[in-house]
Image (tube, rainbow, N blue to C red):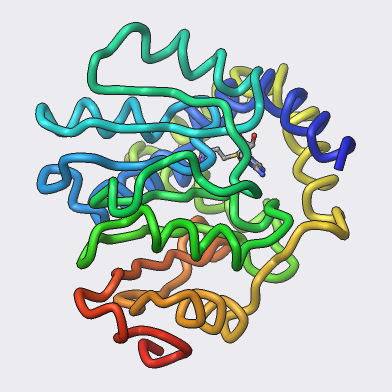
Length: 253
Ligand SMILES: C[S@@+](CC[C@H](N)C(=O)[O-])C[C@H]1O[C@@H](n2cnc3c(N)ncnc32)[C@H](O)[C@@H]1O
């Protein structure tokens, strides 16, 4: 467990340096926001908020939303605080998602959890806690890597997206060179940490069946399940049913 905790501290130092310039990640955050229906949600939880990128993007998209971000890593939260600043609509809390969530029943009408589930000691406990703190008909958007995730296809998606922005091959090549130079200080540690994450035996990389089983066992109805992020993440949208009996033990699959 100590290894994992150290991992997030180091990750925090290079995280934004790469990801804020990385088109598949920015596209992914946009999709999460869209699926959550941010404009219609009043109170949203970002579980494992990291450096606050999704939160920052959500406040820009809605004037009425209030957001709580929770993460157990101080370094990640410090970066989120620095980025978001003082904002009456955002609360950042330090806390572990492996413990009972420090929120009231049915406090939120939306929950996002992006690239965090795989790292939790007990994903089932976490999902049940999400169900508890979510209002009936509330929506949860979950993104988590599949079995044997790879960074190669995600970088490829990034290059393709960049290429589409430039009409002429010479400009494309030039853009690519600039990007590699821009990313290079953080790229090596970023890829190294990703390798460690992929090989971490305590992490859970879900197959499709396992993910469906987890979510439905915990009382959610699945609205959408597809691949995203260069095919290297599950993108799952689920709903807490209005009737407490619905969605229990696999009824939603
Ligand atoms: C890959 S980052 C994702 C951050 C953010 N959701 C994003 O998409 O940019 C994973 C985050 O999960 C947090 N995390 C991992 N295990 C956690 C736990 N048990 N409780 C709370 N946060 C956790 C880490 O500190 C890190 O900030």
